[in-house]
Structures are given as structure tokens and as C-alpha cells.
Amino acid sequence: MKKWYMWLVAALLIVGLLTACGTENQEERQSDEAQTEETEEQTTGSGEAAAFPITITDAFENEVTLEEEPEKIVTLIPSITETVFALDAGDKIVGRTDWCNFPEAVLEIETVGGMDFDVEKVISLQPDVVLAHASGAHSSADGLDQLRNSGIKVVIVNDAKQLEDVYKSIEMIGEVIGKTNEATNVIEDMQNKITELAAKAEEIPEEDRVNVWVEVSPDLYTPGKDTFLNELLQLLNATNVTGDQEGWPQFTEEDVVSINPDVIITTYGYYIENPSEEVKGRSAWKDVNAVANDRIYDVENDTVTRSGPRLAEGMEQLAKFIYPDVFEN
Image 1: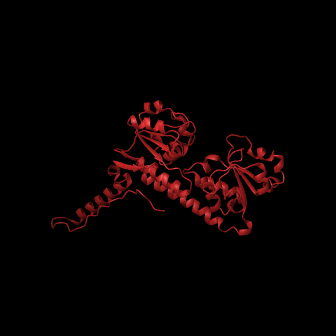
Image 2: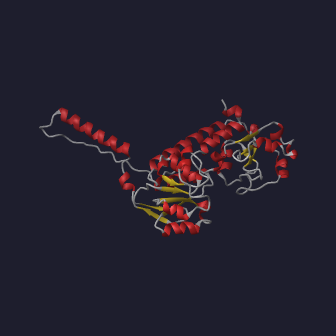
Image 3: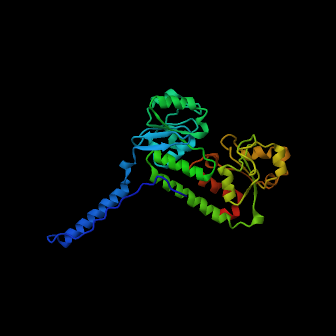
């Protein structure tokens, strides 16, 4: 994948002959000093001072200029909050939404409300930048404009539908908060894990591929083809039985029974104590393969529905549930 915004580390190389009065020991000392300076540059992140001011073109084509690295950040969606923490900048978050719940340290941060955030509250926190999300930016347009009019910088992060979009959003967040190296490392870790899982899944014979129904709520909403959750299933050599649909469609019980999936994955354990029993309690589903064979699993919701660094972790959970003989070994 193309890596934008990577900082360049300029290595200083001292070459040349010393004067006649120099000694061999002086040459060695000079060489050691040059190496020490180079190491210190790399350790502290050469180019940090030159990284700002920067101008970001956000998801809504707004050009936002940041004169200095932000020290106070407000995040308006959980995936962004998780990403900022993953980039080792969680201590800079001064405001977050009611829905931000990971990592645990985030619960100590002041909340600014839910989707309809409290504009006055955000302003009172005096953030250097507010990180909003394209999925909610239209509905909160007036509030975001009020923040801009008060002099607060607002950056709208792209709405990620595919894994490539997730990586781009992490890159953007990393650039905005001065953590481009950390963003690169997080993305590479995700890619390596996902590649490893996908490579193992390639060994699964075609005849052993499993048909999977993913239920993101008891109202039978499910991921379609243009979602990263569908992409994760494809990489695992599993068949998303609703992979021919757009977005997040809603099905009827009759639809699912007729599809007859081999595995049912639920992602709403936060809201229902025992999702498996919820599914088994549907009398019309008793002959569905997944129900008859007791192959109903609940995946931690946030790891597979949030466009953040834990998607690789969520993919691993899916892999172990769908193909336990392959991925539990």
C-alpha cells in the first residue's frame, strides 16, 4: 500500500580527511559523535519540528491548517478515539463521546455527549483540533460550523468501507496529531496479521468453505458487499450469505431460514446477555444448519464493526469461530 506522509530521516555522514595535527583517537571520537547524533535524531523522530505547520485536506475536501502539533484533542466517534490511543496520544484527548469505551482509560476522559455533541462543552475544553467522522458530519454540520467559527480546527476523517479506507483514516489521524511513524507501524501490524490469517485460510479446500450469516442486531441487520466486515470474511475464505447486498440490509426471519447458513455470527453481546439463546429461541430456525449444529458465536462487536486498529483482532476471532480446526492449532 502506498504510504503517505512518512517522515524522512536525514542521516548525517561525516566524510573527509582530518588535518595533519589530528590523531587517530580524534578520528574515532568524531565518528562516534556523528553516530550518536544520528541515533538521537532517529530516536526522537527527526523532522518533528518541520512537520508543522501542515495543511490537511479532510474527507469533505476542507483544507485545514495546523500551525503546531495538537496538545488537546476532542474525538467525536469511538473508532477515532481508539486510533488516537493506538498511536500513543490518548493522553492528549480532553473530550470524547458517550460511546467511546476502549481502551479502559478513555472512561476517565470527559464526555461531550453522543452523536449530537454538546457544542458549548467542546468549546469550553479549548481543543487544538476536533476529529469528526464523515458518517456523522452531515447531521452535525451546524455544530461543526459553530466550532470552526469559534476558532477551533475541525478535521473530518473519511468513512471507511474497505480495509484500504481504514488504513487511510489511520494515516490521516496520524498526520493530524503528529504521529505519522506510529500510524505507519499500526497499519503494518494490522496488515501483517491480516495477511497471515488470509494465507492460512487459503489452505482451506473449496468444498470446506462455510456459509456465514452475520447478525449485527436482533433486528436482523447484516453486512453487505461494500463493508470491511464482508471483506474480512472473504479473506478468511468464508462465504458471506448476504455478500451480494449493498450496505447494511435488513432481512426477515424467513429470508435467513431459506439461506440456511452453516455458521451464525452475532455482534451484539453488549446488549443481550446470551445472543446464542436469542437465536435458538426463534422457533422457525430450529432446522437451520447453524442452529441444529450449535454453531452460533458472538464476536466482540467493536472489533469487527469499528473502522480502527482492532479489526485484525476481530478477524482472528472470526477465523477461530468459523474454522476452529484450522485456526485453533
